[in-house]
Amino acid sequence: MESENEEQTSVTKPDEFLDSEGEEKQETVEDSNDIPKIEDVDVDLDELDEVERERQPEVDLEQFRLKNAKIEAVESIRINSPYAKAKDGKMHKIKVIGEVVETLEREGQDDINFRPTELLDLEEDDEGNLIGLPAWDKSKWQRFKKVLHLEKPSDAIGKELPMSVTHNKKTDKDYLGFMY
Picture 1: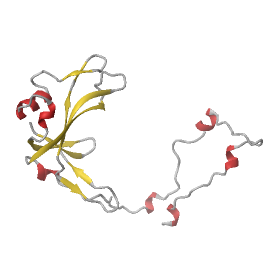
Picture 2: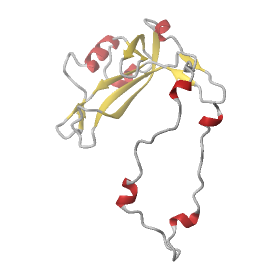
Picture 3: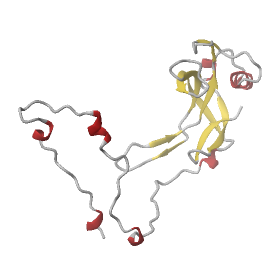
Picture 4: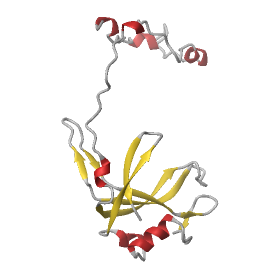
């Protein structure tokens, strides 16, 4: 079974890219369209065994719910968004970053740090240019500001908030955030 599924590699010789006079061949649009986007694979699906997908050991984020975490940084970032007013499809946000609450060590790979983060909206004009902090009393910024008694975003550094756990249905992953 193993020999049937071995991956085959091919070696491309330099002369395959050159014409008879030694000049580079020009690929035409027809050439690139001849390459199939889907290809059949000669495998007997009835002969395949069911296998469990091996996953990295997971961290149960529920253990952090309602526990306090210190805010380490507050940054201004731009992220892709379907609601963006800017032509590049990005919008301004405040990113609140908490301390590392758990580290998953992986042999031979980078460690994974778990920390709470929150994104708060910033106000933009009709072209997507940053114009300020939202004054609307139900905005995330105003709620965050009120709970922590802040004058400006950088005042949040060093303060503590309880953590929340949010589940993303699209990615089927849990994320740590802050309750405010």
